[in-house]
Length: 318
Image (tube, rainbow, N blue to C red; front, side, top):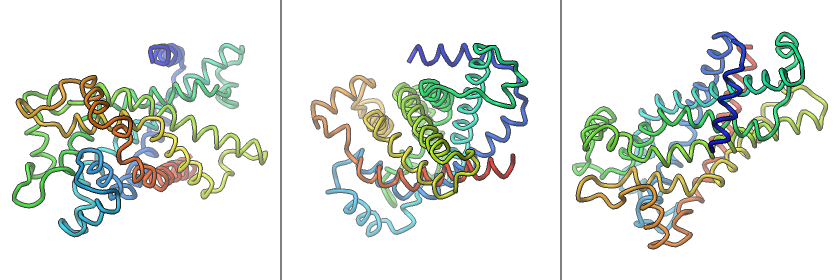
């Protein structure tokens, strides 16, 4: 991880100014992708979180049917406002961060090859797959500042009791209560360390898988990237989503456990390490993969919608 950060930092320092215009486009494209991601994935996500954090359900179908029976169809979009705003911002940062780091690596590769910045701008130098992973990991690391509290709020709202037993009266009330339990760092930002690790690994693999598939498609058919049809962009984006979750799911399970844990005397996990140890001791290896089925089922359409929305938006505004 230290090598990844050092490599990206070194490249960023040497990057010439690309202007705010392209960065703004990257951020806007990511925001569009974020909205598509939330609307397509929220019902799957609430089932995933319930399976990760309780043992009250026999499986994904049982969980979904009980939610529908006991809480109604609207429960599948419980807590959507927070991710709709927050995930839009997160995905915007992810794509903005990734493309910023990508351009940094392109500039670095051009400098090593003795190519002028002007020529490099016209014909960007290709990245190695390690550099694509590093750019994605950089995007995930930058995104952690936003994603950790946003996901914490969403998970608390998704897992709270229904009806009179509810703990929070919406996202603002949730933020207020978490921030005072006992403070922002230990309350609202609980689970940030494991989120940091998950984001770096997940988005390193996500962007790497997508770029590999897109480049292979362009090379195989001798076409430019913007000539790849939308359905193939969506397909490759969906496949990248599967890679993302398979590569990072155990970290996500620990994050969910820590972010649904109690406070004070009700706290079960003292630290990330303690959460790993207790999960292994009480549930075995399967405990780190609980809920993986609906997560992978969700990953394909959600990631497909995200990449298709971003790619088509970027083609339009460019």
